[in-house]
Length: 284
Image (cartoon, rainbow, N blue to C red; front, side):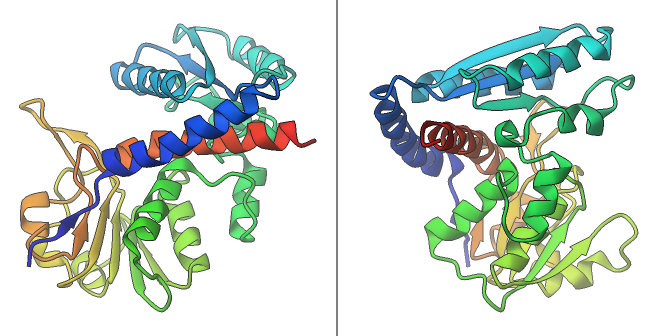
């Protein structure tokens, strides 16, 4: 068996074409979807992510703003900017690029974003709504993973799903979405005993742990669907996921590559949430 590749670039382009059309329809009403991105510090990876998000907005016909600050900026200045953006009718989504410098209270800053503009879905209020099955915005990376299942016609009802990783950004919301879709979900983490045994039960395996090639082919149930959320840079500069792609693709039925899998879909679903926010604003 050789797994079918779940191509995030191809699916992202397909979805973004539809977003551009919807943005053009909003433009006829005098509105453009608007995203503001806040970047604190000079982390090279964060700078790349922000640039990709801004470029994606331009290609989809969205308005975007980047507000960059040095790492030693007083947190109060960033809180003030968020308050300003909350009140700006041109802005429908506000994103704070993580991680933040240590002197920032990340949860407090995220909670300062107006709920209707929290297009990352990270505010405590939105997280609670997701747990209840009524999210205002779905966190972008898990949202993108769910779109892979939808596009490939993969039913989740009654499936055994294992999520390796329990972060607030990916692991926990991913588990909630899988559960709401009818899967029986196990969440594994650094304290889990016999990780391999858990993984081998999984019809759906989501790796989101930040450790390169940790999930190997002998840890995967034959025919499982593997979603690799990890993105790690090896000593030679190459990127890889949390899954050992070469061994895993010989066992899985479907698999996401790194790069070109979940990454492009994360940005695509950020556009989806921003567009949805703008459409809600236009209809109020």
